[in-house]
Amino acid sequence: MLPVFQNPVHSKRCRVKPPAQKLHCDLYHLLVSYGLTWTQGLESDLPHSWQHHGDLVVLGKECFSNLIWRQLGDELWSCVARALGARRLAIQGHVLNDGLRSPNVTLLLGDSAWVEHKDNGIRYSFDLTKCMFSAGNIVEKQRIASLACSGEIVVDLYAGIGYFTLPFLVHAGAAFVHACEWNPHAVTALRRNLELNKVAQKCQIHEGDNRQVTRSILTLLIHKKWNSVVSNNQSKHYTVVSGLSGFISFMAC
Ligand SMILES: C[S@@+](CC[C@H](N)C(=O)[O-])C[C@H]1O[C@@H](n2cnc3c(N)ncnc32)[C@H](O)[C@@H]1O
Image (tube, rainbow, N blue to C red; front, side, top):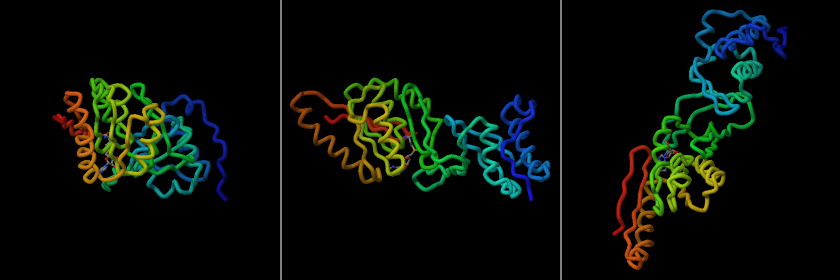
């Protein structure tokens, strides 16, 4: 019978190594403690990249594919998490081309995949296994935060979890945002993020396909505001933000 590896005692050398080496070292000891043999092929099967989301680490694609790892059971994931300084662990698949940008992330260790990021004073929370996270849109988020949108009504198409809706409301001073999104999990996160950032009363979420909801929102905006535009003798400026593809701004009169 194989020995059960409960509390790995790391050698001093393992403890002081950088995470990648520590992972290698700890896994080696774990495997050997199970009476298994470390082979060179296993080295290329170790994760080469990972992302930290607080205490949750997401491993990059294409690692731990060798069947030998299965013999370690859940102890494998506890060992990996410890080596990388995490309490929860998930693994990245390819983003699914299903229209929802589903992330294809699988939780390996832990009960929940909800994480929170704080960025430019804004809190973004979401379930990593249900909503895509785009670290690459940070420049665009900052650009939006720096816009002067005081009094403007914004329509955010493809709103996701609020990557642009929130900076429009929290920093750019938009009066109101109509946020359109069809992924129910992203909508749940968006609702939560509006509350977390205390701007829920300035946003209406339109859950559904943009191609259906956009026309009715714009018609509603123009008709609803037309009277006030006429009576106030002021022009009203609307901005539509559509993902990263830029803005379409138009005047209602
Ligand atoms: C890449 S995310 C964009 C999030 C954010 N705007 C950004 O650029 O970082 C795209 C979002 O659009 C949503 N989406 C894609 N097609 C849609 C459609 N036809 N109607 C509503 N939402 C849609 C997806 O569910 C996803 O949350």
